[in-house]
Amino acid sequence: MEFDKAAGGEKAKAPYHHGDLRSALLRSAEAELIESGIEGFSLRAVAKRAGVSHAAPAHHFTDTTGLLTALAEIAFHRFVATQRAAMADAEKHPPAQLAASGLGYIRFALANPALFRLIFSSDRLNFQDPGLHTAAREGFELLVSLVHQTTGSNPWTDETARRNVDAAWATAHGLADLLISGRLTDLAALPKDRHDAAILAIIERSVLMP
Amino acid sequence: MEFDKAAGGEKAKAPYHHGDLRSALLRSAEAELIESGIEGFSLRAVAKRAGVSHAAPAHHFTDTTGLLTALAEIAFHRFVATQRAAMADAEKHPPAQLAASGLGYIRFALANPALFRLIFSSDRLNFQDPGLHTAAREGFELLVSLVHQTTGSNPWTDETARRNVDAAWATAHGLADLLISGRLTDLAALPKDRHDAAILAIIERSVLMP
DNA sequence: GCTTGTATGTAGACACTGTCAAGACCGAAA
DNA sequence: TTTCGGTCTTGACAGTGTCTACATACAAGC
Image (cartoon, rainbow over all chains, first blue to last red; front, side):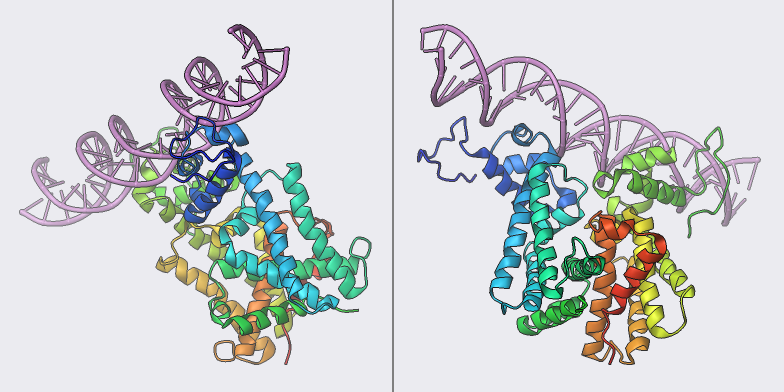
């Protein structure tokens, strides 16, 4: 059983009150998701991994949906952070930034397939949840602003620009989803530089410049 | 496909031997999948819907994976058939045929979101199964041949052509997956003709002509 | 006509699952 | 000290997949 160092510095004997069970459960939930997939995900396994009673997760997150929703919120933040990191490594003019964000999108999926599946293909998430809703919106707004800068048209008002958003999103998303399900094997097998170059090329042509 | 054989209506008294339980179970499985989603899918619910004992499905399909794999095989055939139907309605020159197949791809997803999710996002399928493997390959080969005809290069041998396959597939797949998860709401809200036109335009630019 | 074999289903049991209600524990406010 | 609210455990319940043993029906072989 694993226990993180609490602020009190207690050891050996587990105290009745965990101290930071909420985040420990989220960590266990991610590990379980990676190991068993969404369809094999089990609240009780999460509890066991955290070394806690079987009903503890429900106490913190109401039910399975609650726990997965909280985890999805975290995942979304990491997802957007990965996109921003890829952007930081790219040239600073808009088209390159847009393509780089797509590359980050795909990198996150490849590095975290279970989390990617969770946030995009699970029917056990509550998108009414304000935290998850905001986190998801953050990613969308990044994409919109990148398309805006790249094409010079505002997707919030211009329909052609909005179609460019759809196209860029779909291209990156399709590549990500097909890659993690093992369906673009030869693209996946390319060495990193050619792999990235191929992806960037595909994403770039998805947006039509005016 | 192999669904309806004996269109015999429901009898009042069920005989011990159902007669065509295998296909009845597949029909029930599809209905259950639509109603409960993959994550809520239950063998026992399928059995109950078919009016049969709880262990009957396992007898025909070994386990849950077996039943879902058999259903996925049927779904793949319908999926490819929908693509071919869309192609039949389109102009007969290659680029239009390729784009139309993508439109069919997306139409199937919108009409059968549960089946689409099953064949593309489930970890409960056995792709080693010959039937499923063949069915899946059929769709891929259709795409490859369309890209071949459109660009004049053979994707099986030419790498650039292969990247065009990746791009076309990813674009259609991304649009499909995002649409059925309700993420491209304004594209989805367009009237049918403009909806189709927008999709065709996005798919067309995904493939780079030589 | 029989018997027998084999498909096709059923019935029961087991270890799991999520969720609910009730209680045990602990820190701190009163 | 007493009380109280939040944290966590315990026990129960119905529902799950899958295993085993058993029941039924149909079509051969004699």
